[in-house]
Length: 343
Image 1 (cartoon, one colour):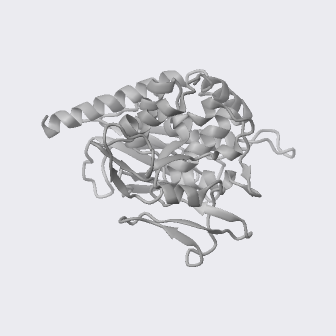
Image 2 (tube, rainbow, N blue to C red):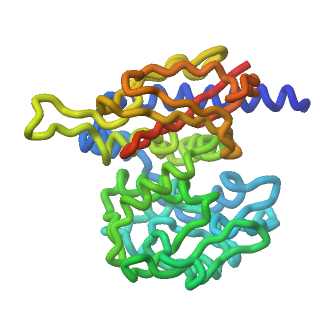
C-alpha cells in the first residue's frame, strides 16, 4: 500500500470515529456538572463482557499488539510475543483502577478493557494498589524505566502519602482510565489517603488524547460495546468537575472557560470556534500536533470569544492533514479539544 493510500485510510478511520462519537453523545452533550456525570454513567453502562481471560487475549493479540510487539505502559519496554501469549509471565496485565479498590468486585469490572493495559511484571507488582500522584522528589523515589526515556516513579508526595507517578507519555491515558472507571462504576477516587481527582484532571490536560488513543477507544467499543467519553471529549472533564456556578451575590452564573461550538470539524480550509469565559479574561490559544509540538499560538483579548484557524502554523506554513489538539488557557481555567484537518 502506498503512503498516500495509507494516509487516506487513516483519515477515513478517524472520520468514522468522529462520526460515531458525535452520534454516541447526542443525548448528553448539552449537559454540565452532575447532570453530565450521571448522563455519561447511564450512557456507558452497556458493557457486560465478563470473561477476563478473553479480554486478555484481545488485549495482547489485537488491541495493543503492533505486529507481534507489545509495550509496557509504565516503562516503554517492548516485548516480542507469539500468537498464544496473553500475559502468562512478563509482561502481564495492569488494572489501572486496582482490583483491591473495587467497592464490589465483579467480573465485568475486572475484564473492562478501558482500564486494562500491558505492563512489565515487576513494575506492575511495584505499583501494586498505590494511588496515582506526583512524587515530591524524583531523586528520593524508585524509578522504573527500560531502554526508553519513559520514567515512572514510586515515592512520597508532599503529604507523605506513597504514590505512583506515571511517565509523561502515558500520564493522560492513565487519568482518563481512572476517570472513566469512576464515571462508569461510581467506585471512589480516594485511595490510600489520597484524593486522586485533582491530579487526574492535571494529568488529563497535560497529556491530551492522540489518534492512537482514539482508535483504541473505537476498538474497545467494538469488543465490549461502550466508549471512554474523556478520550472523545476531553472538555467533558472541565464541564463535570468545573462547571459554571452561580454565586449567591450574583444574579446570573459566571461561566468558566468553555468551548461552546466547533464548526466544521473535520475541517478543510478553516475551523471556527466559539468560547465562553469570564468577562475580562484574556485567552491564550495553542495548537499542537500529535508529537506534542506547538504549531500555532495566539491570544484572544478580553472581548474576543471567537477564533478561526486556517490550518497554518504561526509562520503561515500550511500544516499537513491529521489530528491536532487546540488548548485554551486563562489564569484559572483550561480546556482543550481535538481537531481533524483534511486535505
